[in-house]
Image (cartoon, rainbow, N blue to C red; front, side):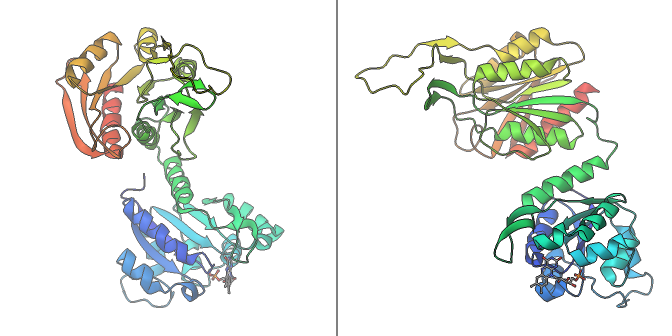
Length: 399
Ligand SMILES: Cc1cc2nc3c(=O)[nH]c(=O)nc-3n(C[C@H](O)[C@H](O)[C@H](O)COP(=O)(O)O)c2cc1C
């Protein structure tokens, strides 16, 4: 989402300036090209040199330092950027922006900005809740501004309150969401995609269960990638991993829960990606109390519903079904069988039981099997990169 975007980063004088150094690095890591402008107060907290070295570009601090006669710097920066980010945004600069004041480089450039502006206010709680600050926020929200709600938490003043600069992850997620809301040519726009993730847990008693090694990383990466391509995503997850706030998540535990959750969504869904490792069996009864130690224990299992098979039977022509085949042997043979037996459109075959790929690690190597096409192997790489390929396949198939 952020990759390739030109981002003008405006830094104003709050105590959180030091955290913005890390935010800038994160934006760069996500592939953004970043140019920084700072107020005089901001450079009291962190030297512009820090931002200069890390962004590999001069930092704008002075409206009248016009070193290049062919441009006016503050207008040039405003015009250059695809998106503007103000972090942290002080109560003072917020008030100036709400009133069209342009008395330094930052406020002058922002008054000349026509691209979407994403702001991260951070300040003392009384400053934040002051009606004048709230009125200023409301005025800017009516223009091209998205203003984040600060966190509630420990403030620099030594007590807890609202106004805290949010965690970097939250800022990045909300910024990605903001960029997406301004992109109208995304290939999965208007499509609804359900992704399942994680290893289901089959309860033996209230504190014990049977599960498998799946972490949910592959499913979560697929959900994020489908969302980035514009889809409305429902992530049905049995994983303990967190997911971005923009992903609509249904928390499930057992195979039966997952079956019910996915089937409930299916009619109004364009594509289902079954990346979860669903247990084939569950104990035929769950003990109500924690089981006591005995000399021997025999558990009886019953077969769980086959979610992929049920979806394959119900599937309409306008729906796409993607399954995963995790095998320790004869991978392609079993995957091919699964493709036909389950009426899937694609099977993503992956070898499990190895240390560097598959369950519970960050990387995977998979082979894509679909009808009328030779198998295509995606060599070992990050699961986020594998998910790009799988979603690309889905986009091509749906078109
Ligand atoms: C130690 C210290 C911390 C400050 N932290 C904040 C802050 O977090 N948020 C804020 O709005 N103002 C904060 N201020 C006040 C601003 O620095 C002050 O309002 C300044 O005029 C803002 O200038 P600027 O908006 O041009 O950057 C702080 C001031 C000091 C001395």
